[in-house]
Image (cartoon, rainbow, N blue to C red; front, side, top):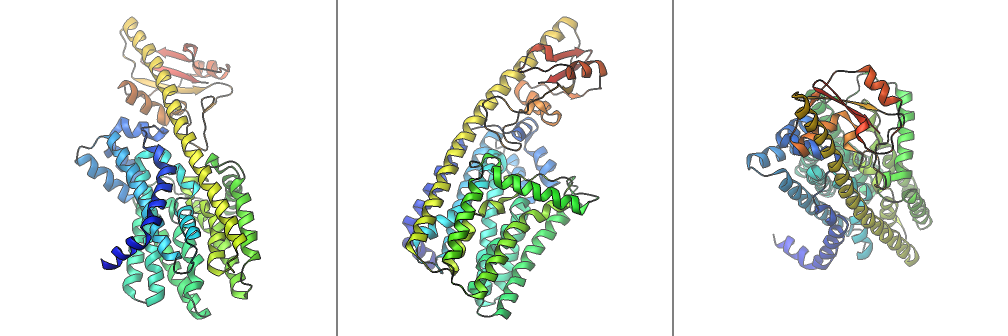
Length: 483
């Protein structure tokens, strides 16, 4: 307790600045918004979400979180606020923990501060905040990872089995929150390991211990998802095709970032930081070999879990490790390089720009989510009014629906910022259509039968906006032509 008080006293201004930066970037997400998944969350309640998809996907802590809040009669809207606050606090504490790790090896407080934030609250974390209802547990998982890393470094220092077991425990807890963060369990320790390895034998032992923690975490994820009924695990894999798809997916992810930050910026900054790092690296053989190892781990490990799932969907939230590619070379320079003012200022400038871009992106995504939700509500109410009018005129209750598509269906409203599956039109997909209608109108529709005539009608047209020509009701089923 005395050590904690001393730490808080010594670093109070650092922690205040750290919290202010993190809050500034992610604070706008406190505004109530809806992602596509959020309509299901509101329409069918926390218990349904807790079981499907969270429990079946092995996200045990997320499941427990929702069950506890449901038991306490917390509303879905309040849950989102709690989740947002938990995310902010988790990112702050994770950054503070890493700050205390890195400051043992670097005396530059500004670099220590900025790298801690850019590592923990990296650009890809933005996407987790789009889904407010579960960002809290996802970011709690990130916090658990950095607690695990902290105890891994303690184990390397003191060789106490207690520290190893604590590290392993938090690693397991992290993957029970969210699996998309698991690569950090290996990337960060591999970066640090040489500082705790006075000789090659110790280096191998330390790498092995970190690999054991990561492997147990990864294996537990696979076993949980397998035995709890996740549908995403692949039953048959064409390895060469999967590797090719993964390569294409990683390239697309790192170039576009799915608009988390402007296109190509991440790779440009990575190239610059890597060149500067190499120029000022202490040219020892082990440092260069270690840098190659870190880069291999950085680019390979985040992609590994995607080999075993049924499809490659390389979005930021499931590949948080790739969001660290700018800061990893900077940290390597701080740990193993010759400190030079020009390098320090260059890195501070790059990280400053990166944080400003994250700030701008957050504002833009929040504004687009609000507008997207408004457009969806208008469209859903028009569908509801159309159903109501039909029922009054024909005395037939409409209880089913079927979705078809026109010649060139668009999945995003005009002028909306989107990336991957962020800010897509929830009324475009069968799995989300009923959630939107149920939440916004109180009417729950079941899956209807196909009608080839209506399907052909839809596919022969090319609408640019919503109108009643896209709606057909036959008996108890409404057919919707998506435009």
